[in-house]
Image (cartoon, rainbow, N blue to C red):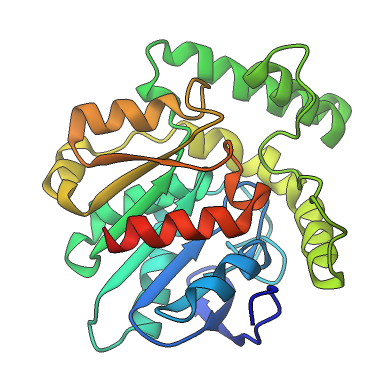
Length: 288
């Protein structure tokens, strides 16, 4: 099926401090798809359906989001903890040590880079789409101030205020596009399953804005370790967002650590703007 309703095998994995919910489709080598922003596994339904002919496509809800429940109260999340979550899921789903590819977008692209730094021997291909690492900007303070302002806007005025600050900061005061973490309007009426995914994303936004945005955007990559795994690394950049703050760090990472730069359809949230075209480009990048 290609409408995003391909049945998924679901499961839960206990990890230190949380229980992860995950979904698996297809057969073949493992492709782990990690959602960014406030998204969960459901954001990849349509893409997974298109890739499950060649890969075992797995997606999961990051800890503290949707169906992945924390053992205690929510606090600031750490890239390295979510990286180890992903590694444990890989070991569960690919216990024979077979080839593993990882895709991450936005905040989860940062996790993908950390995963490559820590476990290069376990990965065959890592595709990180627009990791928003402010420390790699020409002016890191610009990024620090923007994301801190988004968090402050959330604390003062709630989700809508934070998204407005994000959108204006990334695209200018005349922009009329959703910012990272918020579901985009679909070209067609969303299915009931998609509508439920968007509702969960919306409910995850407070955690993202308060506990994920600043810690993840402030992550400092291990350039030496990434350089050693550069032959496995692809940085994705959106054809509509390549000049924006969210895309610049990835391009600069390639200049400093190696890897290759590949253009993807759409902007920073291209995987939700046109899942079909994005999945086709991801397939090409994985097989190239």
